[in-house]
Length: 261
Ligand code: GLP
Image 1: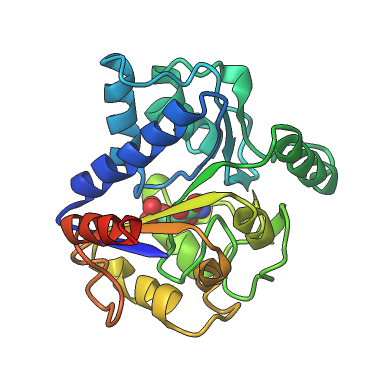
Image 2 (image 1 turned 180 degrees about the horizontal axis):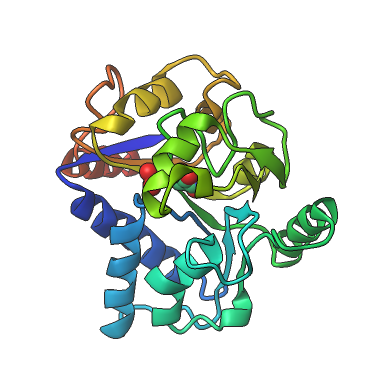
């Protein structure tokens, strides 16, 4: 696990964008996993900017959202599908048919979840998964107590999560109570995971996830099992880390040292 502490969420966005651009340049048919929420917003605006400057094309990529609210009408402005279109995919050259999200409006959620897993597998699996983290350590909508082996499933949102997400709705009672989410097992199957967090309100979750014991009570601690995770945090979100973390320039020197054998 590499942990990079940057000065600001803007800086995190730039550095994460470097990784995504490198991934897509190396493998134009990359399969990308996308998170919603505030954490990756600078990443997406950076990628749009680089696409406009012809530094990257997403024309051959396939994208899968990590989660989707249940109970919102199709196309609702706060659905994650509408969100990702608004902040990212409508502004780049990925075909809209190549952007997938769990079908939370399906008649049968179990079938929708199975189909979502099958679609990811058919696409060749996720090459690079972008993640945010909830204040309670959730990834996707895998709330505390979620199995590390879980695959895409229907889940109930924790009250803390509903309070955090109330800012996007006119009142808290309008925040959906359930969602479809990739499971932790699904997320861990990605080849490379990029976790992004900024602000002091994420510092506890980040410290517990990276340095605490692995426990289902901190879903993001499952990332300790994965061989290739890159964590980008700003100074505030990394503020409670004791053992991990170095600034990007130090990380680059360590890489150079490793390569030198
Ligand atoms: C949300 C989403 C996650 C997101 C996380 C953090 O509820 N389900 O996919 O990564 O919580 O959100 P934010 O980045 O807005 O803090």
